[in-house]
Amino acid sequence: MKLGIIFGGVSYEHEISIVSAIAMKDVINTQIQYIFLDENREFYHIPTDTIKSKLFSSKDYKKCQKIELHKDGFYTQGSFLSKPKKIEVDTYLNMMHGADGEDGVISSLLEFNNLSYIGPRKEACSVSFNKFLTKGYSLSVGVKTIDYKYFTRDDKVNIDNFPVIIKPVRLGSSIGVSVVKSNEELEYALDVAFEFDDAIIVEPFINGIKEYNLAGCKINNEFEFSIIEEPQKAEFLDFDKKYLDFARTSTALKADISKELEEKIKKSFKDIYNTLFDGALIRCDFFVKDNEVYLNEINPVPGSMANYLFSNFDEIIKKLSKSLPKTRKILINYDYVNKIQASKGK
Image (cartoon, rainbow, N blue to C red; front, side, top):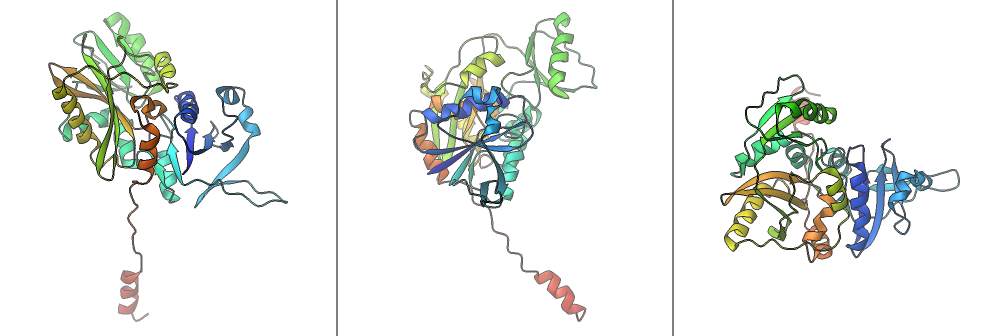
């Protein structure tokens, strides 16, 4: 299999995407074609043997081949002496975190060009990219969420009980997130959150709540799960901790939980994944309080594809690439137009 990894994008999580993409070299045993989208939305073909983080921070990636997207894939730009050359790829892997990758932009682009890809489809992106919509979706499929309030930039934010956690609605990786313990801290936290987004959600910050992460996908209508991980203890994982986390390739430790709780978490994951996330490998982060499972958030393009939660990640990716949703063929034969023309004698 020839795998095309698409990464970068115009996003606050641009650098995280680079780190995640580079990590794939060590965990996927197949031919990889790296396709980078820079801040000007220009595509570049990055040689696998030279890809490293400094290539991007120094802007040396601009010395690589610029490529263009056509109906059947990416091509190098032609010249007077040479024709455009196709970048041979069987399946693409969406590894763009945040905007462009998780908001449905790249999904729509790939679908429009009839290209096979692993990643959330545009409808799944709409639900999971917006934390407010995620809450509603989760409740509609029977998975509990922590109580919350939704505010826009123009609203007056009143908090009755502290501490709370404030999150921008359309950002991941803890960007713009703050734990607020008093009214004195509130104004600054709101300024930080609204710097990144026009809307926020406010949740109670619950001390001692347990958090568990589970990744998985559906292959031939059967679920493939990772281990369940209990992330490190902290008030919350800030951007720097998550940034380093995205470079992980070593297998995480399995959480020490009961079989009953494991099955509850897996059941909640299945209900969230449903058919909406077919074709994607996602990670769901759950809270557990009083033995009840609550969805925290959906990661439709998890950092480093959550490879560290799987013992057989390479196998999972290869199997998933052969079990992707098929685009329904719509027959357009102009029967209706022809009937109208016939009725008018034309």
